[in-house]
Image (cartoon, rainbow, N blue to C red; front, top):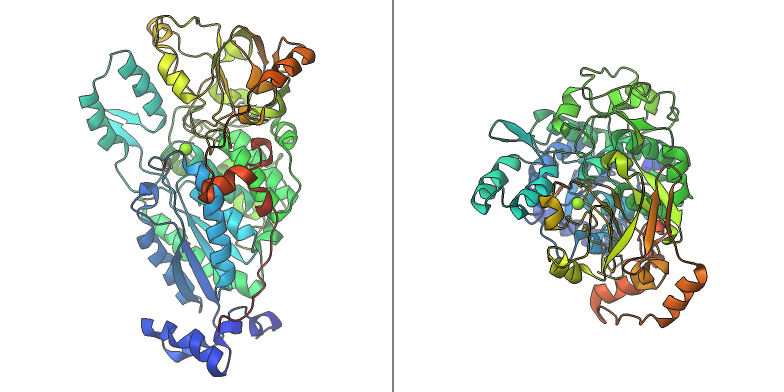
Length: 573
Ligand code: FES
Ligand code: MG
């Protein structure tokens, strides 16, 4: 037995004598646990976001059984525990409002309990960053198992997925599709266990953990319904016990180079814009310096090499059959840091070197990519003093340099009220501006930034327009959509005083977003601006609004940045 094993963290509970040891063991024994189990076995927590209200994670109790098998096989002792779970589709006003709350649940649940290592079961969008953020603030040996994407939806002979929701929405507004038919499409699109089947936020997060080295290779793309997902879960259970013995912690894996790899991979796969916010928050927890500008520097010149919706045509299932993320990483071999250590104890290079690519229609090469446009670009200018984000790979080439008159909506209700009005002064050159959908302003920064176009322009065949907001967009969304404008309108920066008719210039090649107003004029308007009343004066929402940081800092709460480690606190009795 090596020094570390002798000093398992959990022995501060189960290795105790007298009254304390009695209390810590006796109540556990009501679950039918023999005494020898408490003899210095690594105790592995399975942090489960299973919930019937998070349908993307609805299969996690079964998945946890596979993890347990692996832990038992390796001589560990598994304990499954629930944490707050947020279903992207059901939670109002937005699951993002509760990402930080869930991360607090995860952090405190891990630290307060007799755990030596943790397996994080993540799936739907926010469940991955919240669990990784919370776990980083404790920094135990930790491995991530994603739930896997859904099988590709099929309807009337066509492959469909979440990105089609936005297309169907426009069809309904144009009268091309009836509600009755939508009901059949719903069932055809979500036809198996798993999270969204496109490269939306959930899949971007699954790719992020694999690129960071927090999961076993292939974690990102194996469909939830494929039996190999269970195999991966079992192997992850097996591996976490070894990670405890090796004392391989999150901070050993999450180096600056690992973050750089994740940014490069996200650019190459056309990953979600939400990736930016979540990765910044994770970096803040583990203590790796990372700024918005790093995303520009590191993504520049990385083209889109996967052909997956919303930036391309195919689905996550197809990526798995084409070789999965290791095959993508292999294509990026001259770009990635290859010596980063990963959860299986091997380097990124060792993980991808035997990967094979089976379909060049799904995974291309850096020299002959699907789109030369980089996955993500960070904009700066007097519209957004602290930056904004755009996804050029999912935007329209003809709008990459565009000047148009602002059509301003002060909040989401104002937008819904007026967008389809025949009186709205708008044409295809206008720039739609939506305010007060930021972290504090909504609150929680909902995914409304890819706002639907005015009905009268849809009828004319307009498919895309420049849209700007301080909110987010679903990772499944697309269009020339500028997001995360910081400071948000509720903070009273320049963005808050943009008015109808102001001329806005988006210049993606030069990474700028400007309004043709002098700073004097902007300052004059800001002085006249009336501050909004607080959204809530009690409970978590008040805490969140008082402490949430702006999007360019990852929208974590100021007091949650950093970590408190795994130190065991005082006894409970
Ligand atoms: Fe859960 Fe898309 S709604 S991943
Ligand atoms: Mg989403």
